[in-house]
Length: 574
Image (cartoon, rainbow, N blue to C red; front, side, top):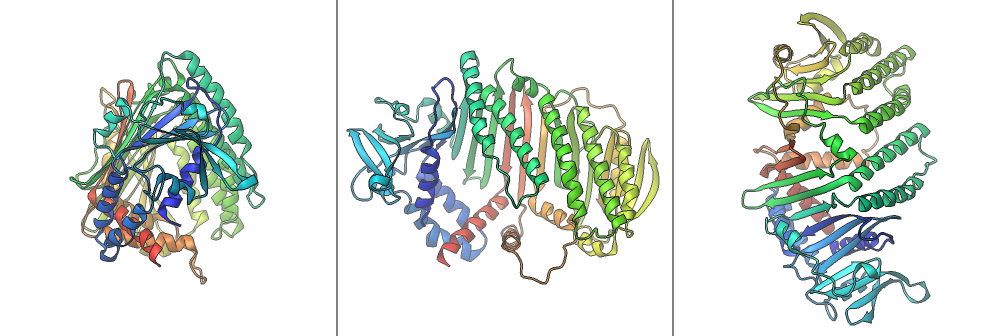
């Protein structure tokens, strides 16, 4: 099946769902893309930027042909628009495609017909869309041709005669900025009736979505309850977001000239709503770890200080309690915890961890940091999490030797009011650990009333002690604007995860498809990022009423993306 078929089938299946909503009551996200020519330019840049020779050639060999097979009838130089609509009964879609040739050979209608969709003229510019033949034919929506665009919607009233140009001044302003993709959701903050209608419609929609949560007979009942709660909580978040957002804009640009990728978003809530009250909690209080600066030789750093409103506090409490029996059952069935005393100790440790997390929610914020530094082949990781009572973590430390006798726990004294411990690793874990932390055989844990700390690597104890000393100093007078920050060398993160993951259980059988795919992606990442730094930087800040975010992707990280695209394209030839 060609890329054209995959693309149009996906859009058609979404767009032709029935929905009932008037203009005032709908939540609508407008997505605009500058055209097939821009998509072609970006894909060409990504694939040909791969350092893997045989994958680099896939642009001319495969990708270009696949893209060309999809654009019959389209005007490649004009933008495409797709509107996602959250109505009363379902999630629908309206699409606006720029047309070069509507009928005849290599036309848009021929494109649709090849997929099993027929069109019937109702007026000179209005057509019905059907799927199937004869008595089995089903009406799937309507198409109106005007302004050199094909406007497709499930209801005829959504595309009336004299439909305005789908790319108005407002959307065109985004395109003139050079964005490769832009999305916007906008609600009138003075329209109280419209906000009430959006709320009523979403409540009807969520009934449909919640009714779709079905228990799978092969699924564990505890896992089902956790999955069900997660969906309900996500719907709570979506309801508030779609109803109470004043303005959301999201954009992405593949910057070919500067060889990087950049995504940005800006969000504002409608005044006097619970969503605005939630946003107003952010960047008000400084982080407990605000005095700790990232190291000069940072391989990765993370800062997060996310204030929790009452809804998210309730959500976390509920989810953690539902997860408690799930964790207990997974420990009970774990392949490396067969001994009864060992299994019982692991369950106690799991319960203690749940208690720590549950108590920490009462602080009203998720507050923590992590710094991974590197010097040559050596690395050091220092991280901390604000908790309600870090001394509760001592119970877990005491249980570790019961879970695995090879764990050696030693108290190292105090730094201020913080107790410091070393943990000697089991011998079978050391080789894997030392691939990323050469020569190291232990990690360090520190606990106080206010926080739990973990450190590992060269100079870990010294760096951890220095960080713990800094939090005893007075915090900054102002909280700053940063809500979350992640800056990371992706290769370093992969190495860290490899060093910390549990020792794999040896299997004599063949690898599963998922394991093969994971290994393949890892090999591609190694090839694509050799000799360069695949860094990504993600930051969220508060600027008055506006919450702003930015994701900056380096050229090296884009090389990996292009390498994966080339590899996927290569599979079409195999």
